[in-house]
Length: 203
Length: 200
Image 1 (cartoon, rainbow over the protein chains, first blue to last red):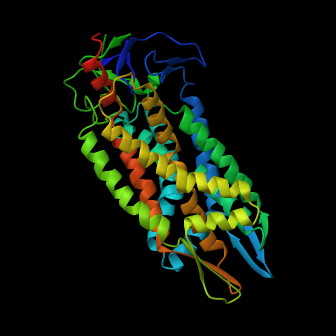
Image 2 (cartoon, each protein chain N blue to C red):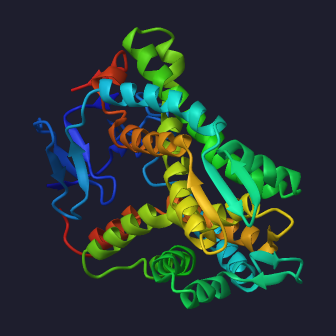
């Protein structure tokens, strides 16, 4: 039973009655000033950006994106090969951790976002999809590709003193991927009427 | 504004449901009145993070060897000092904030919450601080990625950078402080405040 006319603040548990919001509006809790309600764009925005991100993801991961010249020695890496290099040096634990945070979790996240939106939109197996909807929101925090980008920039500044660094085209694809990933993270939300279809509700 | 008495709030999709429900009918998230075993789980994760905090900062995170010279060990702090001396002030500050200040602040704030559960004023700044440490938590991972990338990029005959044990402990600190923040329930402070003070 879902009470659709009540909002509870997730931080201080104050109760409010729901008011319809205009596009772009947010509503703050009177007690603790947290955002308790906002007018999100509908499901098409996260869908479009998740599909874009999913396509860019494979390009950014497989094509080399950084070239490094160190006194005549050349080193070209892609995201995937930078993790492979860790496995070769027997740093398995570090390699598995990085692999989870920047390849496995983002890939699952984009794929399931697309799948969930489409399966609810066409009402195909959506009761099965509903059983894992909550894991997708919980996954957002562990999708760390934007943190990886900052780490990459810090690394490059660190080694610019001893080596020449070139950005290859895939680097800019990686940048576009991060913008898409951030938009999916901000706009995908389970409050969309799409997901409430068929869930039993009460007044 | 009213104080919620017995409805349950799904913390994932923010659906409000009746008290008899075990899982959210909208997103299937297990749903509780307050996060289960919140205090003991937060303490457990936090203790693990505190124990790992010492090896993370004392053991070397990288070994750098240049032109066949002996490998030079660097801890988190010594690599920041090195960057500062090279004139990369911005990068040095970013790493200092992400790797030393942030984990320290997160641990300090969570210990403060856990030892000051009885509040006399409305816990407004506590709520803001909680949201803040929840938001910045993942950015501490920067240093783990830096070490992983240095390892992959600088790996030739001339120069070689290898990861040290410290980075594993540091990754542990970041993960366990994130889990500790996630399992702490800030609503407990508000419950304590309203139990003692005004009745709405």
